[in-house]
Length: 325
Length: 202
Image (tube, rainbow over all chains, first blue to last red; front, side, top):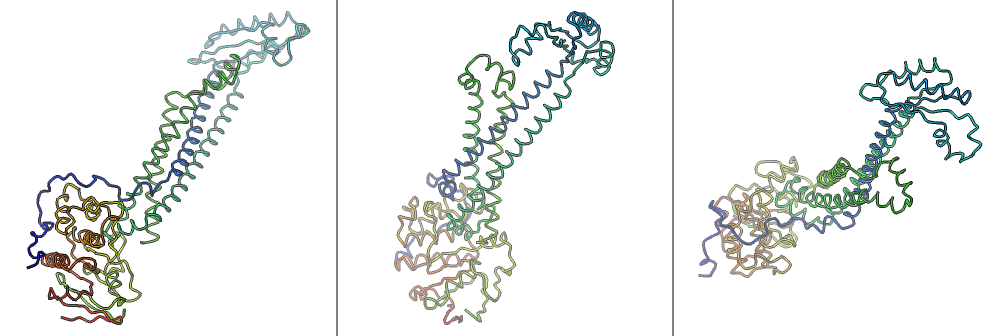
């Protein structure tokens, strides 16, 4: 009798029974080792893509907000310009116009500019010259409109310009539509850039999936041999790509967030004078993102993770189908 | 191989033998759908495998256990994890098969090698791990390519007993071997492959 015949009863894999808990075996040992799927360079490329996409998205968002502020400010103001005939006559005309405007409904505030103030406006362009004082400078009246119940601007314009020859009313409509056109153009450009970067990311991931499958050929073969479905095999790779996507996305968007956060500090350091800082602020806003902006950056991370996951899944399944290993 | 025509009854036990290079491994690969016949038809479980989709092929493979001559263990998984792989692929929960895998490993003499990685296993140990992986899913068909080539006669008998026992429980078994000593231990029909032809010896 050999020991084979004396050996213990056959393993009970053929019987159903309760399974004791065991301390061995890792709960979820990766079937495909992570290092063989996604290298550091892939993470770097995706992080850079995410950084650029975040900067673009954040920039477009900032610009949109600034444009909104501008158009709102412009919309709530109209300007009346009075061409001078003689120095005194225009003073009277201005006063008469101010009186007329104050009587209108839907007008909050009327601020006539004095001759000195009008001169100050042209000072940056032609300098401070005594001789200017003798010039007939057009006079300006700033009118603040009540945005809740705005006046009938076209009628007002007609009446005003008929009654006071030389007076011109400007509701900045041209400016507003120009700004809107510009922001829409920039927005479309930003979206195009983001789409291009998404396409590049997809291409990079497909290439990476291909090389990951090639370097894990043996594993894929064994999985096929033990009856794994394509779905199962694809999932083994997908998990790693998802992790890379999340990691790279957070790094990229994080750096972008930090950049936006530091913008005021950078402009303060580089910009020098307080005046230029204030000017920049007036022009493009503070340059920092609000909660909405940071939400957009978070969305970029989510989008990158989703791109990584779905692209790798379909990439791997397509390659498996092609090769039919 | 040519003019080969045979039909295996469910629950049968066959040895497949013949000189090296006669095509034993190729025949097993044909049966396992990892090789396409250049001509001819292969039916598995009553289904023409040429018409299988990839999904159906995966389904069929789950009903088959294979022991490869070159073992095909995954180097980065422990012996235990390698053996449990078919069950994991089927989507079973680890808590449902822990004890089964452990007990089977003990039975094939790898009780103290469960945590070892294939790189540090001897040829015989790898072979036993490969056999354990092939039978853990209680396959309907077991294909074994030289399953006792790397073990001592005593272990070979023990493994044969495992195959016989599986066969008794309904698994059809084909063992490719040229170990005549092994074949004398169990009276099973032999399929002799020679010069590309198959001869059945009852």
